[in-house]
Image 1 (cartoon, helix red, strand yellow):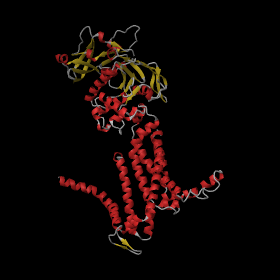
Image 2 (cartoon, helix red, strand yellow):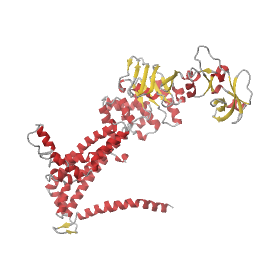
Image 3 (cartoon, chains in turn brown, green):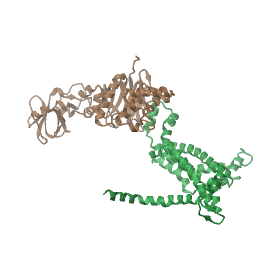
Image 4 (tube, chains in turn orange, cyan):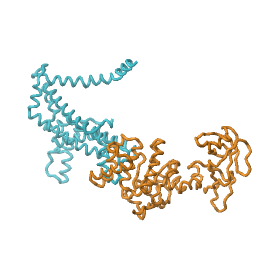
Length: 344
Length: 284
């Protein structure tokens, strides 16, 4: 089997006039990995993806695929294929012809290309719908056809632009699983743009959190969650309380980034009704703002004077042992070892 | 309750139905009825005769005139389609800002602010024997004698048609084009399509409804026209419309009516074929 190539972005920059959409990013995506570009809208993730695909001109920097610099190549010559956000299926062509489109462009004869297209439709379980027009398909089915169309060129990298955002929540989770298993089966790299941290956590081998055209953190999901690199990452991926270091009375590590902020996972917080803290743990006095029952856990929001709303995620049983009600004064506490000092 | 509702529904469609009845159905029925009438040099005699149709369809002149008219229609259709498509393509895909699109689109409609006749007549000083075109070519030394075919010829008729009716192609095709999702063009490029391949495999098929609507406009107008043919051919070429005009000026209304019915059938068939080829309802 041929070795699969790594992708490397070197000093990649995109400017529109005076605004910088992507600001000199460096990123190495190992071969065969599932990479999620995660960030709020306008963070440059889609622009980055489109530059890799060749649909956006690069202002500065290079895109390297394996040993080849593909920065200036046309989209079809890069070994990448793109799946568009709205799927961009050709409305006048049936599923087979949609999938066979790129083969037709390469002047492969009708019999061969249609046979290969049906083969590809089988792989995404859409062969039963081969003769239908895109308008006659549901969102999930359209997505599968779009996947088949992208994969028929045997790309080395598949680029997906918010592929799940058009689906309803139930289908989204199912298609998420299918994407992951497909990626595992094919063994090629997927680069997937999303603004949903759940999606990124569930799918990615490598999560790249972007903000303002820069990469805040690029790491496996567990590392991103347990050791967020910055206050932005901690806030964006959720499940964290971000506090000024002074408030948390965190031990300031000498040498290491003089983080003015710390992050504490919400599920490591304890909540107790009352006004006096326990000994040996760091704690804050606050007022319960909200209590949300989420099934296996209960989320308690706590207002602390001078801070943004903090939250504690408690297992149902632990909450039931000492319940609190909105409006009640509470003590929010945590263990010193759960305090994570943020870089920026 | 349902009864009341159905009455309300009928009331709601009544105004439009009345307009159609009065201005479309009644005139057409009248024409059809009159086409079977008899006539003499001085009067029209109610009757039911097939004589008008016999005379019309058995005359070689009719067939020649219909062929000539069809020829005009086909040539004009091809030219307006080509030019209209290019203009629409430029407006829809090359002009990026919507403001400029609107401005240029309005510029295209400026000729429509003057009447058809004036626009046709203004070709005469340009194309005439001693017109601008001929004098310019003579002075440049490209020709030694004035070109005769420029004015009062089939060339002039087609030129006027193209000038007058290209916009009828531009508008619906442009309308189809601006509805094409731009990501489809990127998807085509991603699939390795060149510019021409994208045009042929994606843009053109998606413009079909617009092309059909524009074609219906142009073909029906040209088939029924008589003013342009008379003015621009200098009376040297016939068209179906002119035939009818002549019959009417001789007070042969039943003959003109029979001709009108035949032309109507022909045009409706043409439109039916186009509708068969392309589903234009998507566009409406």
